[in-house]
Image 1 (cartoon, one colour):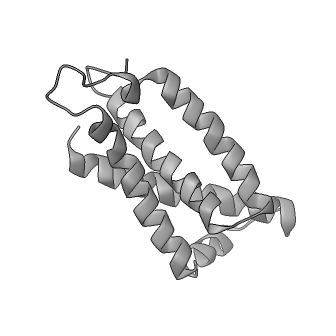
Image 2 (tube, rainbow, N blue to C red):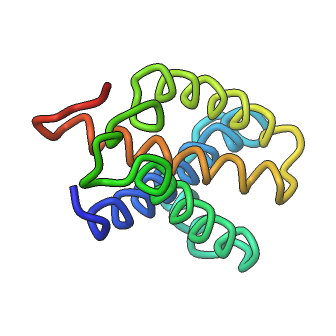
Length: 133
């Protein structure tokens, strides 16, 4: 995949990740059934610092695998493009999701969105003929 596709995928996964967090946050801490309008309102009224962290961390996470395993080299699709790393990051992302429900500080937001960017890169690369290692 091209860099542009990975960047779009990273931002898409970040927005989806925020909506997942919001839905769980509302389900566990506020009224039991979040409505679509409350989810969209929350996304549109997101704090500027969280929005900045969301975009920047997901873009960094989405480009790191190709920095670690550069395309057009013999090492491309090495450890940074492995299924093991994908599964590990999904587990860590899930832990960070539930940590955000109790302690929403910026460092955890950064880790959360960075992992979503990285996961998006690996998910998109798994759809190519070369797949993941």
